Length: 153
Image 1 (cartoon, rainbow, N blue to C red):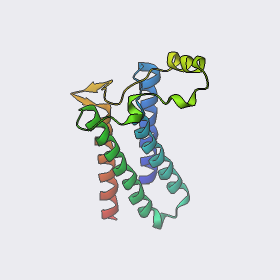
Image 2: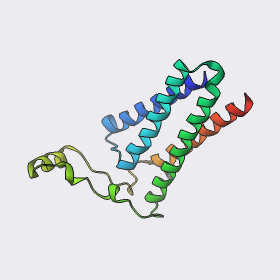
Image 3: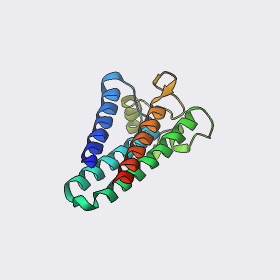
């Protein structure tokens, strides 16, 4: 049952990020997209485990999901450190990859179509915390919930 709930939580987070981007024009940086991948992985693994793993083995799947969320904590924490300039900005966050474009026109079209967001800029915050910080807190909370559930079984 917990795996189904975790899957729903992950889908909810992904829907919220979609709404922020497409309805409120709060565009993600490259690190934000990687952080979304964590929720895609955790959600997919949760749903697949809920549907196909026998009930007496699902507690192991909960541990795997907890590990995925811990990875998300590390990734989001690294992103927060980048935002506060505690660590150096990675190369993939500083500029777009220009090797994918065959011509200047294709590059120009992509630049005009997609806003580029640097990883060290906070695009939105609430109570002084960025979305990356909230992501770290949520991933940590979900990982702890998984661990507590596993220990109580």
